[in-house]
Length: 130
Length: 294
Image (cartoon, rainbow over all chains, first blue to last red; front, top):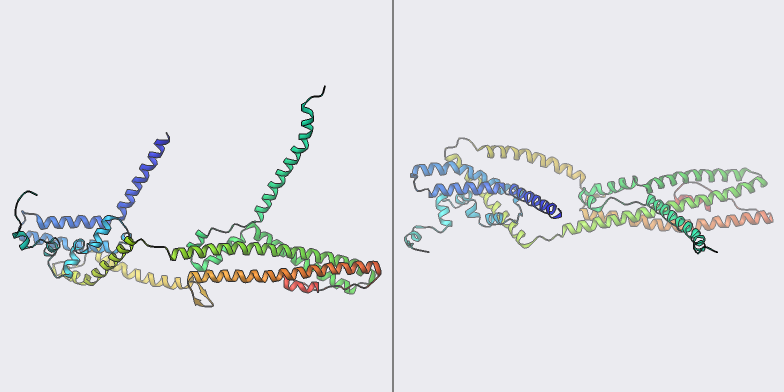
């Protein structure tokens, strides 16, 4: 009986902790989702160039907003969660819209630069087993 | 034949009565002591208050305590006693020799009672100052601890990275906005519009808040000071009161000696028909009451 009570308390505490954690990182999670959708739009093979550009432009304003929401989110200030740390230590890859504008580059080019994917790298690559 | 339990019973009787009495005495003694004690509001709660309010909150807490009620009661009694002493003094001056002897006796007794009240009042003030002092010391320690709380290196690095990121983003906000408006959007997004609107309101609220904050921020002689300085000043005030109280204690001891001398004079006068010297004056503070004993 004692064990049951203890377990219930632990489970409730964990559940509460997770919901609190999720609530704290909500803006960041939104940014991650939008970024993933943007990267998917970059890499989707069956899109024509016009459709791809239109899609990226459509997402541009929304991502700009979410990036600002993350930057202004007081709950993330000093939050030592790994996701928060990664986001702010890698500004160029996290805040794609603002970082690409800062560097006067199209967002796709900026993203590829950050991943070190360029013509030379692609040409020198070869197919094979890892 | 004698029962073996009888002697022990007769011996136990007084012991039981003694122990029960002792327990009752201790219990009532403890209750009385608790009734006159003051446990100030915790320093944790005080630290959370605006600094200027700390003193008022502690004073309010004291005023609600049993010790403050007792202090008020004693102060009233002192006022009454001072009045009686004054009346007796005037009566002695106007009375004939025989009546004056009785009046002098009452006069000395009233002064002695007045002295007892002053002493109790002083003890209560000392108790109050001691409790306030230790509370302010705790508050000061907590304020210092709060100011020196170390931030972990990783956290400091993260905050630094966040500040740098923020600065970088701030620089390109207008450029991103112009890119957005050039991409065919006729107006700003709902978030951007409402954020800018709220920002203006926030600025107004911030200004109003800083004005109000100004009235709450601690000042010494009209000069704004830090919370730590303010609490240090409160501690200084307590020490000042304590040293004045020590001086008053010395005054009380002289007054007590004078009452003893007065009673000795009266005794001589009654025994040898020698003229005694009546004493004077009023008021409940020790320093002002000192005149009564001169």
